[in-house]
Length: 220
Image (cartoon, rainbow, N blue to C red; front, side, top):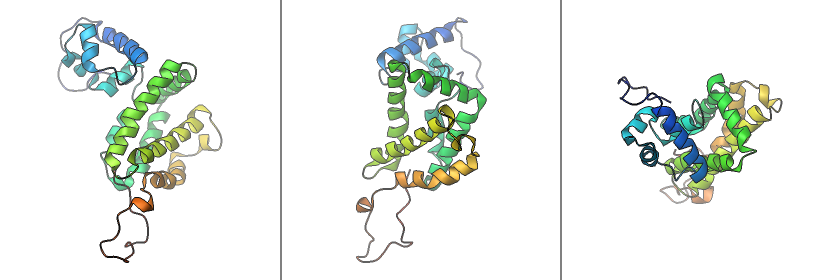
């Protein structure tokens, strides 16, 4: 996954990028997601860490390239989460559906999930990556009580939908239009991110109900 900046390619042997990827793939599968850093991969490859950053941008980018993914759900969510918190659930679902349904990015993702069902090392890597780059990052933006639990519930719902639609191909979910999926799954996703009523702030004046009578929206 080449960095798309306007700069020219830095000097290096023609097979340097492939060599870095070979090392990264082995280290991810052997040590897990957390143990791998751009610096550790660069040190083993005998290159400057800036070159690894130039080629892959970030750890998420290196992970995706090492596992031959055109893009990763974590990269997609990292962009989506920066938008309006009130519409985050719908936008996250829309963006992730688009990622999985694009032929270039969807096919490698389906192959990865299929491989994870047979290979514990890959399954563990995917799990750790989801925990650290998706659940933890969403929880950090949510804040409040049980943020990680709410984030995990949110991600679990989307993961279940993706498996149902793209791995099991269960009808009628598999053939629903994306807009219909978002309409049906948007409300439970929003609910998953909401704090429990017992944790929500009380109104400033005792006895005064909330303005609209509904739980407050999640702050993502």
